[in-house]
Image 1 (cartoon, each protein chain N blue to C red):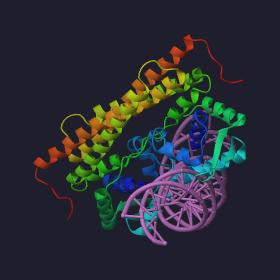
Image 2 (cartoon, each protein chain N blue to C red):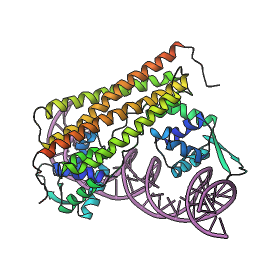
Image 3 (cartoon, chains in turn orange, yellow, red, blue):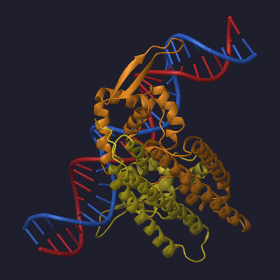
Image 4 (cartoon, rainbow over the protein chains, first blue to last red):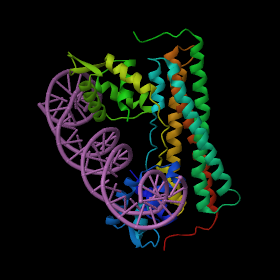
Length: 186
Length: 186
DNA sequence: AGATACTATGCAACGAGTTGCAATGCAAGC
DNA sequence: GCTTGCATTGCAACTCGTTGCATAGTATCT
C-alpha cells in the first residue's frame, strides 16, 4: 500500500525518529491512517535502503540515541509520482456490518452492547476532532493548514455519520425486542 | 480478520460454491466487504478442515462440477461466539487523505483529476445503492431484511458523505488556483 | 532497593490479502 | 475450425501488517 507515502508526508511535515512517528500515528495522523511501531521501523529501513529518506543519528544525553529521518530529493520525487498516479476509492470493510447480517441468525439483541460501544467510541472520536478543529484550525489558514483541515473534516463528517447510524441501528434492534423472541437455535 | 465470518453469514443466507460467493462479493455483499476468489477458496478450505462448513460436490451436466458449501452446527456456533465477542471500530485508512496532505508539498491542482474520479465513483455507488434500496427494501420488512437494509443504509450514508466531501475538497483546490502558483520544487 | 513506566530500536514468526498463473470443459460467434 | 468468453477450482510467490518478544538506559514512585 502506501504506508510508505504516509510516512514521507509525515516526515516532510516534520523530520522525526521512528518512535516519534509511531506516536504521531497514534494521534493526529493515526486518525486516518494507523500503523504500529514495528511496521514503521520496517518501512523506514526499506525506504532508507531505497534512498527515499536519510537518517542522522542524534546522541541523547539523558535519553537513548535516536535516528532522525528526513526526506531526500528522490523521496520527494517518489511522492510526486505517487500523487499523480490515479487510484480507486478503497472499499469498505467493517465487521459490524457482517455482524448485523449475522444477527439475523441469532438473537439480535446480543448485538446491542456492541453497538453501544461503537456509538460511544465514535462519539469520543468526534469530540477529539472537534477539539483539534477549534484549537488548530480556527481563523485564516495557509495552504498546508487548509489541506490538513480538509482531511480532518472528513473525519468529523464520518464520525457524525457513524453516530447517527449507530443510533438508527440501536433503535431497530430495540424494535425487535417488542416482538416475541423467535429463537433460531434448536 | 473475519472474512471467515463474512463467508459464514453469506453461506447461511444461501449455500453456495466458492465461485458463486466470489461473484456475490463483487456485488451486494462486496459493497461492504471485498474479497477475491483466491482468498475465498483459501478460507473455505480452512473452514472445511475446521468443520465449520461441509462441502457437497454437485456434478454439472453442462457445466463444471461445483462444490456446494453449507454451514455446519459448529460453524454456526462459531458465528455465535464471534457475534458476542466485542470489537473496536476499525480505523480509517484512506490514501486520498494522505494525498491531500502530500499536495501541500507539490502543486495541489494535480490532485483535481483524482478527486473528480473519486467523486464520480462515489456517485455511481450511491446510485447503485439507491437502486437496490427501492428494488429490495420497499414496504414492510422481516427481521433479516430489516437488518440487511440497515447495512445498506450505512453505505448510502457514507457515499453521500464522500460525495459532499469531494465537492468541498475540489472547491478548496480551485480556490488555490486563483492565487499565484508558488512552486515548491526547486 | 525495587517496581513500574517511558524513550528508543529492532527481530522473528505468523496471518491476511494480492498478483499472476494454470487447468478444464462448455457455449457462442466469426 | 478457431478464438473468445464464461464457469469453476486451485497453486505459488509475494507484500503488508500483526503479535510477541528482546534490549537497554533513564526517570519516577514507594
